[in-house]
Image 1 (tube, one colour):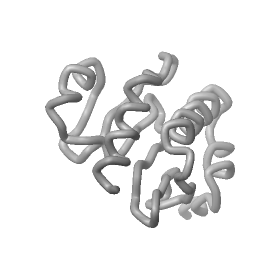
Image 2 (cartoon, helix red, strand yellow; image 1 turned 90 degrees about the vertical axis):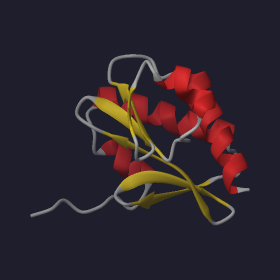
Image 3 (cartoon, one colour; image 1 turned 135 degrees about the horizontal axis):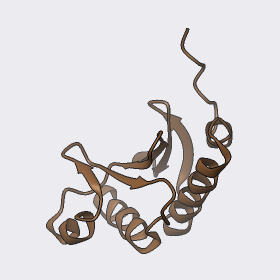
Length: 117
């Protein structure tokens, strides 16, 4: 039987071990700081943010990493992304136990804001 999908980001985060919760809360804070008018929701079973009714960015906890979804496929980020596992589907993985790259995440969110505005 499949576990029920969280109804809010708070509920989503609580479903993880404490050490992962800390990183998920930090990711949420970084996104809010970069996009203060974005609204939270759960979409595709992940934490998500929308801006002016458009999908902005998603994040999710995993066994070994925090995934950020909806990242730009842009040459300007190529050097920054080299240190992390990425996929051609717009995903970057930040390993658990290592500090989240606040400046990079902020740049990604601001880039997404420009793309959807």
